[in-house]
Image (cartoon, rainbow, N blue to C red; front, top):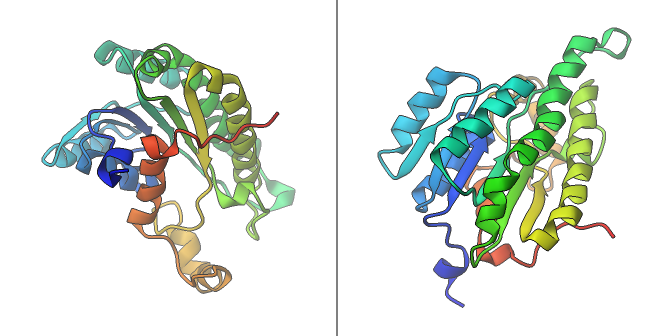
Length: 248
């Protein structure tokens, strides 16, 4: 019952979408610092390459820029990863977007942008990487898919971010469906539904509504990097091999 062994991720291959900023960056730093071989992806190649270079000073981190909001980007990222690695121990679908607009004027373009990235990409990237995930699942440990959803997928937010809440609710159900399908193949699928964290995506919202958001939280604050990182490390390690959200 050694804690370091139970939570160890050393040597595991990890791919994190949206890994160059926000929650994705918090998670990437934790995996690199704990000995994993981490690939981060985002649509901004310069930012992605810069963070990978920084994190490589403390471990192994590589940039695979791609825009997974498009099917071409999904296919590119899967192809680029498979060209470098035969197996994938942990896929973290974290890339996300939001769009706020009043109900009477909510645009189709905003809806499509959010749903394509927050939901469609989660499914099709997992599909495209099934072969290396299955290769990892043949090892002593299980392979993992960790989808970053949101508390807004569990309850409606006050803001008019209809596509965001709908896509995150869809991500949670998709996680359950994939978990049921893939658990027999030793691929464990779980979701994290974070509350507010101080990220670039949340900056404007926290600036305008931060006091009310903090007041609505039982702890009276937003999350810290180690708190989201700790959950991700748990779901990626042997500590969680009996943890999977499955619907019968």
